[in-house]
Image (spheres, helix red, strand yellow):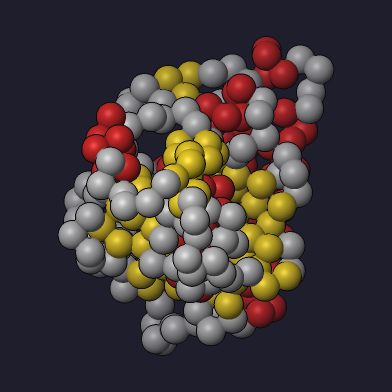
Length: 264
C-alpha cells in the first residue's frame, strides 16, 4: 500500500466479513445439494490435497469482492489464495501488505460433511496478520479480529487464556491430519490433558475463545491455512509461535509452508 496501514476500521472489517459470508453461502449451496456427491467433483492438487468446485467458486467470489471494497487502497492490494498460489517469490517478496485467503479451509471435512470447514481471509502487513475473518458456514459462525479492535465470535468479544490454571489441559488436534511427532510433544506436558479433535482453522479459534488451552501443530500447514485464525488468536490474547519461540510470520520465504508451531 502507498500509505502505512496499521489497522482496519470496524466498518472495513465488517465488509470483509460480508465477503466471507457470501463465499460461505455459495459453498453451502453445493454442500446442501441433493446431488452433492456428483457436484463436488473432487480433484487432486499437486500436493494430493483435494480440490472441489466449492473451493473454486468461493475463490472467485472472494477475489472479485475484495477488489470492490470501499477503501480503494484495500481493494487494490495483492491477493494470495490457495487456489492462485502460483505467484512467484520474486513478485511476492516485494509485497508489504496483502490479502491471504483460503476460500475453503478443511476441504476434507467438507467432503466428509462434518461441518468443520471455514472461509479464511487475512490481511497481512510486514509478515504479521493484521486482521482476520474466519467463517464456518455450516454453523453460521463468524470470527473476526483486527489490530486495535479485539476479537469477536458472532459479534461478541472473545478472550484466550480465561482459565489460567486448568486441572486438565484441553489440547486441540487435527481431525484429518494426525501427526506422528505430536505424541512426543504431549509426553513432555507436566499435567493431565485431553485431546479435542477439530478440523480446519477452527482449531486456532478454539484457543482464541478459551475452549482449548493448547494447539501444538506438528504437521504440515500452509500460510493460508493459519493466517486468518492466527489474527483472531493473537487479538484474543493468545500467542502463536514456532517451536523455537519465534512469532509465526508470513511471506518471509519462498516456501509457503509453515514451520511447526504452538498456539496457547
